[in-house]
Image 1: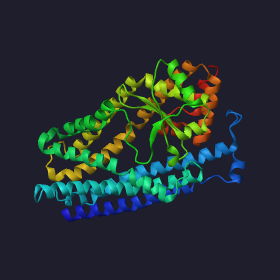
Image 2: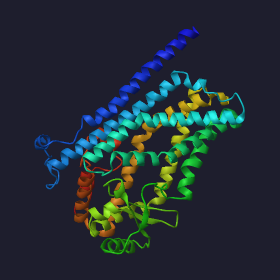
Image 3: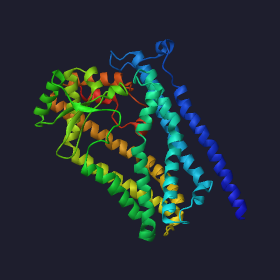
Image 4: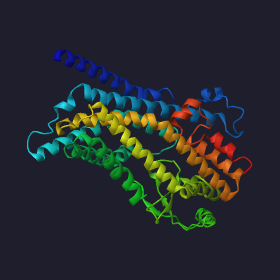
Length: 417
């Protein structure tokens, strides 16, 4: 009977492995199926009549192609990750990791090596999507990085999330002997406090980027326009510029920094692509986020705590609602990751809806601060065209993937203001 059950598990694991390979192929197929539009495809594209008059068929075709590739490719990554974790559990690999035998040093080394192997395996599983995304960005003119340059960036940005991943699950392992049956509560709260709450409270600064460099924005038209908006909002924040152009042509702006020591961060690509007036309007939008930062922080941390409790609670239920020996740690980690993936997907639409609400509030604040609805509409359209973002989405896509209101919705909201 035991041999039959083991055989079934191995067959199921083999099926999952086969599906993982298909999932990796699907990541590539998502981009193959949505190539850069040809002249014939652009000519056949019909721009909806309710779109702005200066939004061309080229804009529409390119945006739809890139957005379709990213959506379906990302979905393939999510499904492939879940299948990989399922295969890891069904194959019995987690049960063969030596986590109790030998000296303490060897035991902890085995645990760390297991976590490293899991993280690198999952990174390899999603690598086809990341590489094809880079190739698509290059083909669409969104990045000028060469393949070696992109690989260098990929390698340099790997150590920080890898270290956080290992520390996170080492904390989970430590709760098993200390908290017995309540390990899941201790682990959920520990992960939330150390890896979610503490970074937000201690510092709002983004992680140090190994590629880009930060320096003050030099005086000039953009500097003056941004300072004027800050004065209108009653703020005096430093203006910093980062050389995003070293890795891509994406233009962005945000407010970051420790509490009480915030600063405006703008990419050099934004300064090049947008006029001083447009940059000032974009800053007004970001100031809208800044004005609601406490509400946003509470919502974000509340959501992170709920997600952590649900993920670890599901893992607790899946493992029989009992105290677990440390020897079960590898299997438990795979179960926790699978439960976190499921919980994240389940709560995703709620999180996206809250994000869209925050964006509407920021738009409304920018319009009140500047009083220039027409210019704001032009800015939104320019951002959509430069970032190759569709002006509208099907309802189901909007519900499942949109962190911002559609550009059509935002343009309509700015009408007459």
